[in-house]
Amino acid sequence: MNVLIDNLGEFGTRFLGTIELFVLSAIASLVLGTVLAAMRVSPVPAMRIAATAYVTLLRNTPLTLVMFFFALGFPRLEIVDLSYFTLAVVALSLYTAAFVCETVRAGISTVPPGQAEAARALGLGFGQSLTLVILPQAIRAVVPPLTSVQIALIKNTTVAAGFSVVEAGGIYSTLSERGYSTLVGLLWVALGFIVLITPMTLLQRSLERRWAASSGGVRVGAR
Image (cartoon, rainbow, N blue to C red; front, side, top):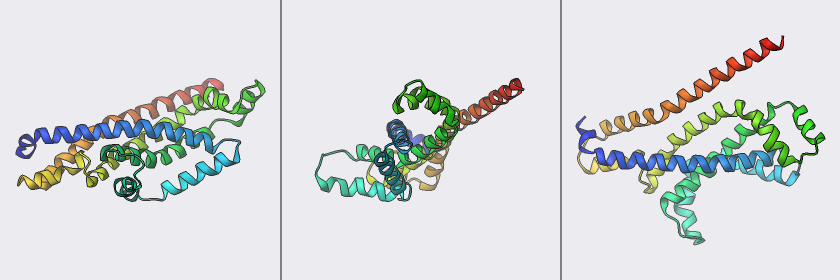
């Protein structure tokens, strides 16, 4: 307990950095992943090919290598001067977007093809059909697995600790310098991540139960 109390400010600062890193990366990855999913189901071949190539490359590349590129390689390109925190957000967003894309695309595939055909019959274009008809119906299938993707993201933020980003995963170095037990400190960090992840897990289970019950009710009524 002394490790936590004596370093409470350090724990607070680093977990605040973790939350900020997660929130920014989550928002960016959701936006980019949804755009990529739209490209993957687009009637334009070039867009489908580009999105498929992106997803294949990022999903099969370890996050550590992606982070290495943005922390060590990108600054040497001298395109723009960004902080390590910003580069970590970019790396996590680009990496997670590939998984978001596949999750959203899978949700889109659960919508009956007749819905898209009906939208086209009404004169709606691809973009309008996707945003007004298909995506709203795909939400139930998409939200639970998307929550799992975001849970993985919040755990992946610890990788940024190896690149001078102030977040919870890097607290062991500070504790070591101060002469505290790093093992005990990391146990407190693990408990902190459990506290952050538990509400998301409970929300996921709640939505799954609610929507499963709703779907069951619809099927019974249809009979």
